[in-house]
Image (tube, rainbow, N blue to C red; front, side):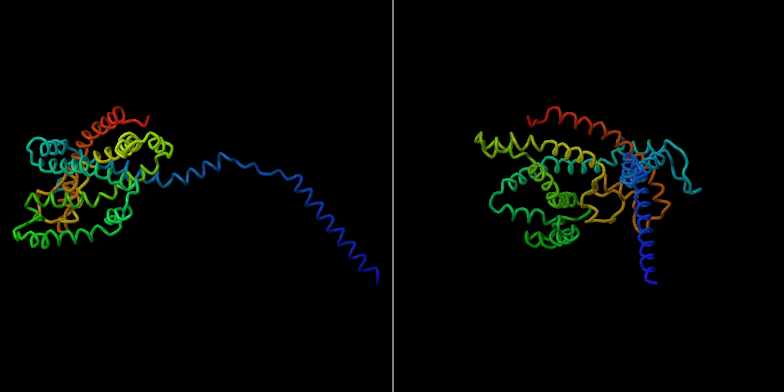
Length: 336
C-alpha cells in the first residue's frame, strides 16, 4: 500500500515528461507562417484610401458626369422628362455674353475678387507680419482679429443688420440711409465690407503659419546683415511665403464663379429675379436651390442652364488659372 503513491507519482512525472518533450518537438518542428509584408501593406492602403476614393468617385466624378449630362438636355414640362438638346448652351452663352442680362453678376463678382486680392490679401500679409514680429499688444490684435472665426457668423450678421439698419442712420443723423436695401447698390458694398472683415482672420492665420515655418537660419541671416524690418519683409519673409500667396490667388480665381460671400446670410431667398447685390455664385445657388414655394418642375428646368453655364465658365477659368500659376512661379520672388 505504501508503494502506491510512489508508483502514482512516477506515472505522473513520466506523463509530464512526455508532454514536455512532445510540446518541445512540436515547437521545434513547427514551420512559422511567413508574414507577407506586401499583402499587409496592401490591405492597409486599401482601407486607408477606400473612403477618399469613394468620396472622389461619388461627389466629384459622379456629380461632374451628371452635370455634363444635364448640360446637353432640356426640361419638357409636358412630359416631365429631359431630352437631348444643344439649346441649353446657346441660351447660357446668350444670357451671359450677348444680351448683357448677367453683366451685373460678372461686375459684382469682379469687384469682390479685386477687393479680396488687392486690398484684403496685402492687409492680411502685413498684419500677419506685425503679429509674427511680436510687437507690443500682438496677442490683443490676435484676439480681436480672430473673433469672427470663434463666434458664429450668423451672430455677427444679426449685429451688422441692426447696426446698418438702425444704428448708423441714427448716429449719422440720416434716417433715409438704406445700407441694406436690396434694390440699392449700397447693399452690395455694405455686405462686401462686412464679408472682407469676416474673412480677414482666415487668410491671416494661413500667412502667419507660413511665416512661422520659415527657417530660423534664414531669419538669423537677415539679422546678421542688419536688415530693417521692411527689408526683412521684402527680401526674406515675402519670398519665403510666396508659394502660399500663389495658392491663395489660385483659390481666389477658382472661387470667382462660386463665392457668394455673406450675401445669402443677409438676404437669403428674398426677392425674385436679378438683384443689384447678386454675384455669380449667389445667382447659381438661388437657381438650383429656389425658394420654399418653388415647384420642383421649375427647379428641374433650371438645372440644365446652370450646368451649361458652369461648363462654359470652367472652360474660361481653367486656362486663366494655369496661366496665372505659371506666370507667378516663373516671375515671382525666389527664396534664393
